[in-house]
Image 1 (cartoon, one colour):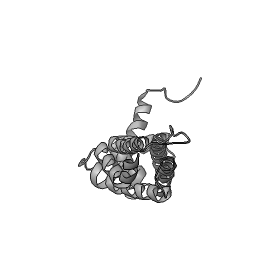
Image 2 (cartoon, rainbow, N blue to C red; image 1 turned 180 degrees about the vertical axis):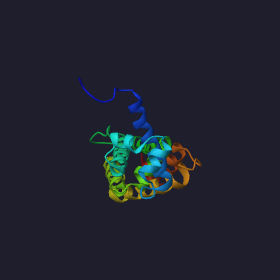
Image 3 (spheres, rainbow, N blue to C red; image 1 turned 90 degrees about the vertical axis):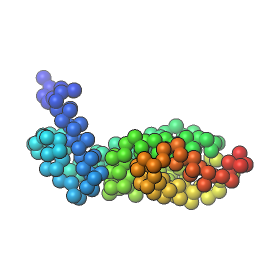
Image 4 (cartoon, one colour; image 1 turned 120 degrees about the vertical axis):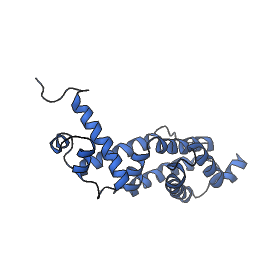
Amino acid sequence: MARGRKVNSNGERSKQLLLEKAIELFAANGYHQTKISDIVKAASLTQPTFYLYFESKDSLFNSLNAEFNEKLMTIFDTDVEGNVSLSDLQKKLENVFTFFAQNPLLTKVGFFEAMDASVVKAELAQQLQNSIIGVQGIEHSKIVAEALVGAVERLTLTCLLTGEFTPKEVTETLMSIYFSAAQQTA
């Protein structure tokens, strides 16, 4: 007979609680200032319980980052070779901002705090570049994609996560700034 906890048992809830509290603490205090003892205290659990699910703070943090990256990149999974319209690109950008707005703490961890956040941003730039390449009338797709990632990063912090603007408003503004000439010829 298999050993361990049953699915949907208190163990599964404990693991989820540890993940939730870790996201909150990493987002608020950063990776280096957050200790395992802080996470288990916030979750009202014990350190042995923590080690049932995670090898270390690193493994927990890496798990959260992998989850963030996977969810972010699924936004681009529907790319098709060939012509991409500006409305396709706009929808992808809006989906990125919507994902960030719906997951503000995970976004702070995965997009800003993670040790490999630069890798995530490089992947995002590559995905945007791949989408931009297919849009007629846009040159220098690499430069545009890299500039967009910089704008996405800054606007996420200053406008989106503060609640000042919606994902749709941020997206429409970016599209008008970066693609106004292409929109006029489309």
